[in-house]
Length: 457
Ligand code: ARG
Image 1 (cartoon, rainbow, N blue to C red):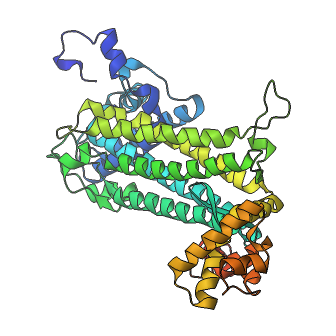
Image 2: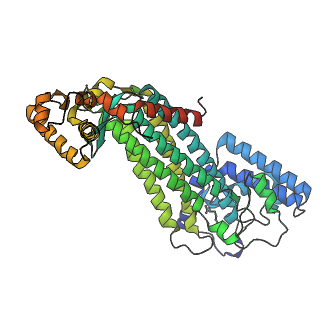
Image 3: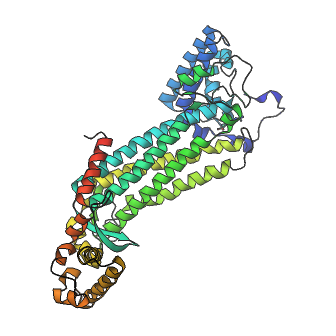
């Protein structure tokens, strides 16, 4: 395709290091679509004859049908998907195929194809995230009032509801979806027609190709358009942030599924056994979601470092943009499907969770709050009094609400019988009815809003 000025062909090493066809063949649909948009425009503008344009478009359809039926052939001599397609087109329709590359370069071609691919990946991620949200909101609805210990520092802090805990992940996923949507919006301009780097002398119509490929319009600067990979980085950043969220939920499921916790039993279909210990059921899917988040972050790092310091405009380094994006997209799709399955299929052991919420003096803050409210004691002082009560309960090996009123009054005489009503875990969660708090009534309100937003109501 470019041999004119060369006295000898590339060495075996050159062919191997240069070939991107092993991975960029994944762009074949986008490449055909962009070529068809381009040739239709060349025809409309009279840059190639209407007859040639029709012949080329029909030839491209034939190539697409072959790819669909037999896959894309991998010939390193043809370097990439662009040359592979053009060369097959020439075999099928002869020298008229050579007119397709008028007013076009592989630089604007690959920028266009890859944008189309990443744009679709954003849409797919959004759909998968929507399905995860449906699973979260459904399970949260079942457990709006199921009590579990809430943790800080992984130490029992205050009782919360499982519904509230699951809805925390709903919020993270909502932000993930908005990041993919932002990324999608920012990649809505079409690079095609920027050509090698400087535009072209042919009277092309960039609005027409942009519209045909469902972009909002053409990119405004040809140098930027052929050398910009922000869109791929935007995607990888959104994917990485999303993977980090998934890894946190995965970690919690792993901890909850362990025997000392026993908060959850994960579906058999997403667990594995041990070849030696017959009793084992391991949360491998959750562990792999946690692990894959590292690889997805690695994909982002890879492309960031590839792009760092590249001069304008195109450099061949940029060919390395695709493997990390393809890898991250594949991993993310898998992780989202696994996580959605685990959330849907998890059996939450609510009796065990409630029991755990009783341990660790989770309602100590409620005692302090009661002292502030009922005895008008400043919070700092109430905190201190409550600390003494916890110390005593610990010595006696009982829960806070098992201390007698005598015990409590020895610690502070202002405490009376009414305090017991505040010390149950139910009273504790019900009391936290501030906006966004864990009280079942609040959780149900947030779930109702979420169901509306998801179109479930
Ligand atoms: N295979 C190349 C890539 O993926 C296409 C662009 C090559 N352009 C060039 N001038 N060599 O980036």
